[in-house]
Image (cartoon, rainbow over all chains, first blue to last red):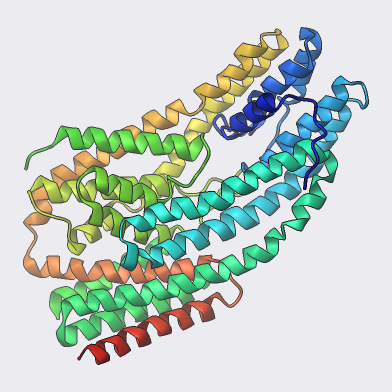
Length: 255
Length: 237
């Protein structure tokens, strides 16, 4: 249970959160997410700093280069509000918020990449591909629902952790055990990929019918297994895809 | 061959909209191949085409991710462009989507992901200019204007990817008579090519899942599906 300590009104915090959903819109190689961060924080900074001169300094400190995982950034955006509140009250210097961002953006990026990009996304994608035979077009909708139920719930929770716990948000994130869940999700992704490969081979083989159907199914499974080994040896994925297409195409045309 | 310009416009609008989602807002995975291609298929009246091309490209790009400042291939453009081309090939000659048409579209358009990455890289410089301008405005005390520049970031992406996707749809219509004129044996071969490419994509997905013992999990699941299917067919006899 997170106990609220923020004096920033809830509608303004909610507005900052909503704006953080656009964090990447002006991503650029120089400042990366700097403009997105400043834009997201702006309503909070306007409320905290009525003096335009002090507000300008606050905006400028968030136009410094900044880059992290776009979802996990919610924790940093919340944490920045936590620190800016204290800076506005004169309880700490502006260097604290810069140190907070610098300290967390790297580790949180690694955590976000590992969980969202390399675990949740592949698992949801492979699972819903494996459900295509049962759900047809609804599998695409299920993918969006499954992924975003986890994504949005975590994003909101991380923002709240940042706003209310500040530097202690790390403890809150640790309790989520994201790396453990990530490992399980990756196993789900691998299993679903194997299952759908077998289903595709059998489905198209059955459609073909006769001994040619058996040949097609076995050939597809063989090419899949071979590709699994070859990609580990550094063979480009497009080469594998095209060569498989041509080999199967030649077999289909001439047998 | 009749070009349906409303289909070309719909394809461009969907491609542009997904570029906005992929780049700027929420990143709720509407731009992933399974969703992007299925949506394109539904829009163009070829849902099965979208679903199967989307499934294959989802598996093919399963491990792709924007890690740090690295840019992955643009799997969204690959999915929307390939589906738009395939659906328009089918409707151009008044036919429906087939595995042969999906295979042709994949062989010709699946590498659009690489093109998309190049476009992404070029457009980053537009965003960099916006960020520089924002810093100047902030220095001059014009904070509202400075932070508002953030909202201009995604629009070049919407325009570029919308046009590219519309171009793929148009290419599909133009290629349609050529594909339908192919000899029957070649079409049969192409129909075999699709499941082979899909199985390769699934194997690549198992590899790029980064799971410990990923090969074992994939093999076990594949074997379970084969056993279940064989047992089911036996009982049905």
